[in-house]
Amino acid sequence: MKIAQIITELKPSGPANVVKNIVDNLPEGTESTVFYFRGPPTLDVSCETQQIDFRNTGILESFDVVHSHGIRPDFLGVYASLFNKKSVFISTLHNYVKDELLNIYGRKAATFVTPLWMSAWRRMDGLAVLTQDAYNYYRANLPEKKLHVVHNGIRELAHTHELSPDDRVTMESLSERYHVLGTNAHLIKRKGIDQVVNVLSSAPECALVVVGDGPYRQELVALAEKAGVADRCWFTGYRDNVSAFLPYYDIYMMPSVSEGFGLALLEAMAVGLPCVCSDIGVFREILRDDEAAFFTVGDQASLQKAIVSALEHRELLSERARQRYLAQFTGEAMCQNYMTLYKDVLMEKGKAINP
Image (tube, rainbow, N blue to C red; front, side, top):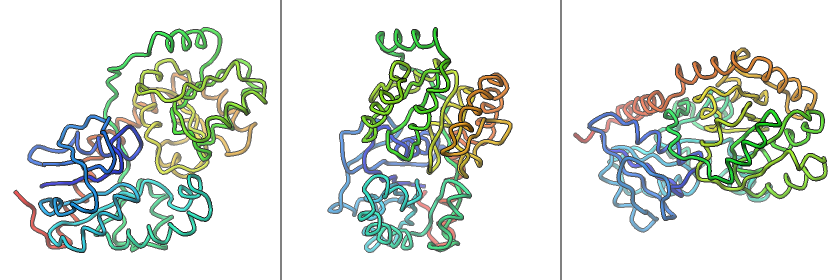
């Protein structure tokens, strides 16, 4: 089987990491190429990579499966399908479309683009959603028979990168004085990190480390100053070695208001970090009551209680989160599920698989 993965940029991000975990875990005899719009690629994958645009979609005709991730790749897939009747076209829906567009681009763009993106998905042969919650969200507006739940998964973290000397000094200093609450995220409002900044006022024994950058970063910095907790908040900015911070965290924070899935949560689970999660459908699908501490979005008392509980039951939650990851959310498990989806859609469409 030959599989084309199409992504906007091949650099560390949620969709790109999904692509990496698919191609890095493919069974023997399966070929894959990752196509990207913008470069240069900065995420290593174990297959060929190639730039693509709407002028050279003919190169996709040699593939059994064309799998797109994101709005621009999805529109290219739909365009290519008009001329390419040999391949099947599949998309992964990485988010809750209108909420995501609203958070990033605003109400006008969300209102205009959402129906166009939905229309593109309707033309696909198969659609992967990341959770049962997302399946329920989309089934009213997309063909139910095309929707398939495929949970994300990740490989074991190798920790090949170390912290820089300066970062290590800062982390060790915080670890000596506080319980470190950590999160690695693209800093947009729906990530809910402001809730953790605010709760520090009533948790003087804790400090917050936020690894990542994004349009909401300066607002978070200003909020920390206003709340009088700036000395216990470290916004590192962009780092290319985010997994190297995980061993320094006492608790991993996942306070999202909404979330497509949350690969960063799986990374925390993989290294056995106890997790505090917002009580939303996607996180309830990943972790159960006895595997994480949950809190109600927008309820500071609930959040503080969850942090205290996670600290008190750290070893137990750590072990259970790790075992949950091994049982259900490895890269191998995700890739096997995608291979099943590819074969099912090919069979449904009556397509022959290239040897």
